[in-house]
Amino acid sequence: MKSEELQRLTASEPLTLEQEYAMQCSWQEDADKCTFIVLDAEKWQAQPGATEESCMVGDVNLFLTDLEDLTLGEIEVMIAEP
Image (cartoon, rainbow, N blue to C red; front, side, top):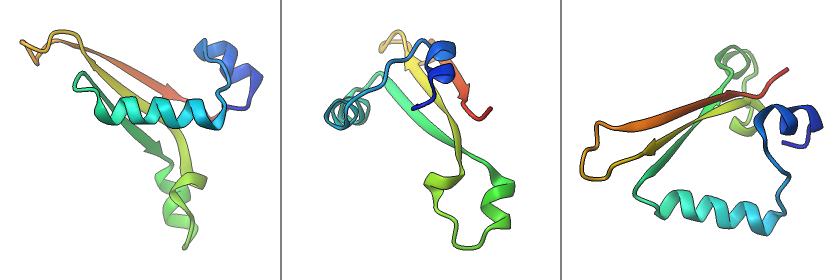
């Protein structure tokens, strides 16, 4: 998320490393959120030894809006590769 264009398009602001860690902890601990990382499968398969980080292209976030009815929620998909 170092791209100014991606920040503008996703209404995001750059985070410090400490802020990023705090946000990741909240995602892990909160019962109403779930996140998934989207990888470029072609890049992953074409480059033996490639790291997951080098193949990341976005994420999918799930927000449960009613913890008493787990069928209600909001989903957000971001593909951040130009």
